[in-house]
Length: 133
Image 1 (cartoon, rainbow, N blue to C red):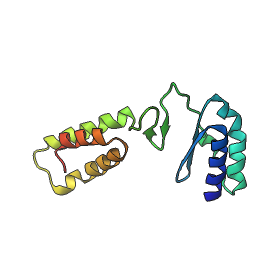
Image 2: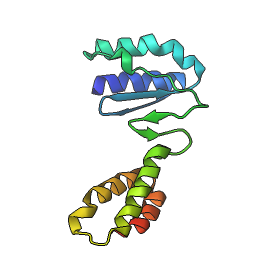
Image 3: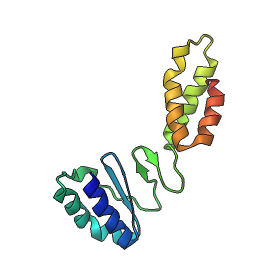
Image 4: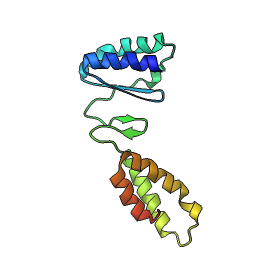
């Protein structure tokens, strides 16, 4: 998707937008006038040989929770509140289990590792709750 990236980065730079891509998830953020560029953005993607799924085009406003690739991106990066709550509960259950094997915590460690890449401080706190290394 190099050509898509070059073209959309150029558009974003000239218009004062922010453009990011994670695999095939394109995110463009900016002021309200960005909406006027939706057609051009779709045209660029399609001209470079890709198909845009209209069901996956989302507009998220500054006053609402903005989630990209399952990460809340509003002011700071974080997991959605529901996911953080579920992870804390899983950590407490893990810590309270009377007998634990090494493999018991593998899934939890993986989720904490992912959280650490998004919110290191919270991951450290939950890791302490879970009593896993």
